[in-house]
Length: 221
Image 1: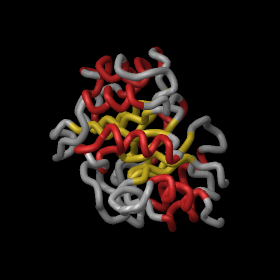
Image 2 (image 1 turned 60 degrees about the vertical axis):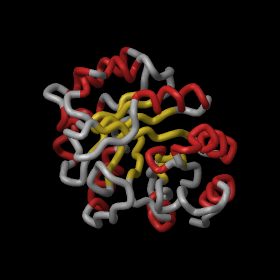
Image 3 (image 1 turned 45 degrees about the horizontal axis):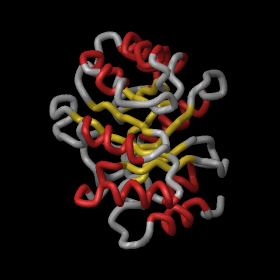
């Protein structure tokens, strides 16, 4: 599979020049913008804000991929839904909600693409029923909350399980965390749909994003 998607992890962007970052990523060929929202409770960090999300939404016509790392997202989901457009995505963590299917249904009813994010310690079996109602599954290959972490090798088994289930259920698989070129060349041909790019491949490289993204897309499988 060579027609994979590349997503920019915007928590890694230069916030002193956010408008320029969004423009150069957009013009450079990024497929969508990945927005990490953290509440300091579900994960021990704060990342992007609702205002960051709204600015990026206003600055590009590309889709937004919103990853909610927050406790009980049902309490604030309307804030995010009302800041997005149809075709955007919201991921929730099932463990963060008493009744995750209720939150997912609100996302679906709003015309937003529903997704779940799976932590390294969460088994596929625990989320199996939700795979029938979501359109995207974001697999965390590092523990959520911080950029620049090391890949956890035991995650490979999770991708294998999900790719098998993907044959009978209608969802796409996305890679998030420690995404190097080796991960794309290994997993894109197997059927992983998209890859969230952070400091490993995209940001802080002192070269135009257009060059980096072009090089990634031209990798041989």
